[in-house]
Image (tube, rainbow, N blue to C red; front, side):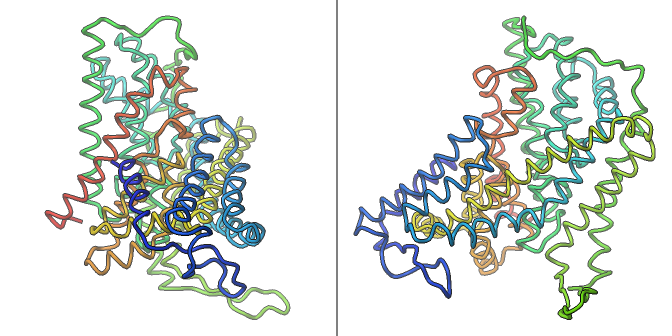
Length: 511
């Protein structure tokens, strides 16, 4: 659906009478102009779209081949500017690409860092293994799929990084699939359902970055539209579980089994040395509880805005912080910090013995993840300034329903970039003002816009070049040919659920 919408928008763009070009204006920077893109008529419009789609295609190829997005996102973006107006390459790089990249890092780097450290101390303490082991032990071998999905969802909703969840859950998932004689090729889809879908962006209160980014644009909290979010999560969970269980039944009928000569097979866990599951769950519960508490308390403490005067000689201008723009970020950061401290309190010795090495790895991973996303964010800001993107955006604006407009735009860009957070950042940076204006004109609460944007970002993002998908397959020792087909079905289910939630809102008014 998203792919068809993008194609339709591209085709519809040719029906416009004229498209703007980039111009070098010292006072206003990049803006629309009444002149057309170099060339006339259809030729100019076609070339503007080719430049935009070519830059996006280049980024997809780069990601699929494993090259650094941090390095090649600016190359792809500046290449598009070069073909549009060579004079603007330097100003656009410093004034737009780097400004947006640095702005993303300024806002979200603390969340990436604290989330990575929290996931690492959960891992070092043995808490993640204890939670996984307890849930699977309770569920038994005849409910393997639902047990793994539940434990992945618990860890994801508790604030553990998606990548950490993959590493933590895979060893016991492999053990349970082997005991149940189910195909190993279904493990990635099972883990993806629990981590990459409803717990990541549909459930209200999720501290994952996909649920945080919309708060800075819509001035909402991560608990936005709770009933719609829970309804969407239920649709994804029930449909996804039904599909995977159906695939398991098919495998049992043909007696496929776990498979022989598998790669990356984990060593069995030493269950006797694991911490108590009750203690292991406490940090996750604290993150959720403290996050909710701070979400309510922070606006009451600081009000609409707060300011201070830096104690620096010669600087008397106060620094003003609009609290509504950062309250959700402060709440998540505070909750993750409490989670980290609680793990240290209950598992000081096992964590501190390996904390130096573990925290180094966590920080490196957080920096890489945040810079990857920030580079995609900067890339999106540049692409959004090009005539070809404006053509597509203007065509998308003609979709009468503001929520459909938002969902299609966000999920399409997430699919193109192979990143939920990257696509979401691009969509909201380029079109959030339009989304807000249209929503307010239609009487749609911005909380609904938040939930639709967050869920749509986790729709078509899991295409083959998605970093989380590539990591998941590498960890499980499987290839795209072996396991990606089932992940793609979940991608379609997740994307369809967004439109089901929009229909639910339209028919019931539920928020």
